[in-house]
Length: 195
Image (cartoon, rainbow, N blue to C red; front, side, top):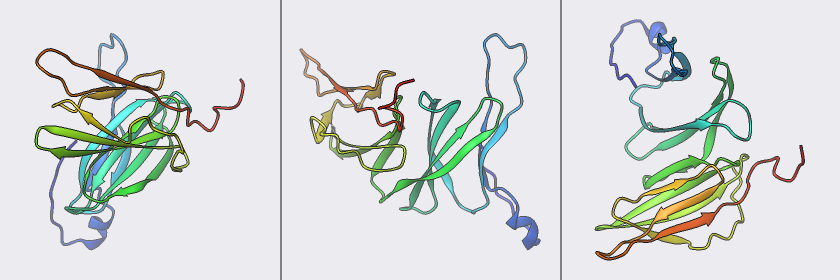
């Protein structure tokens, strides 16, 4: 990410100038030279900050997907999902539900469709997570999550594996540790169709 500030007396020039952007470079194995970057997303709104970016291969559609969290004020954050090909072609650009109310929230794409809205609440050295699952149309899943609130370890370590299994490192003691494993539902629009 690049941060830049400029002033101009030319109102028209400022209206069409990008104040923030997300660029991609597709790196191949054993390439002798770095390819050119391409623009994934640009904003002309002043005083914005990209607070997070999560990208992966899109296993449901084609190409790649990124979710960016963008802060416009101290308490207002919105999310954008960008689907693109390695050639630089943008397939879709969608603002995502839900807006953030200022709590510490992450959005993670799920390998087999949909995404997880993960809210972290800190209580001293204890981190509690709440997970809400949404499909690709931003509809809240009716999946009955085994634990509505999960108490994670000191680092809040968790990950979603390629088979849609979520692993969460739970609180440890000096003599033991635990990992919670949860099989997440398929939230792809194609999950009931045979190919």
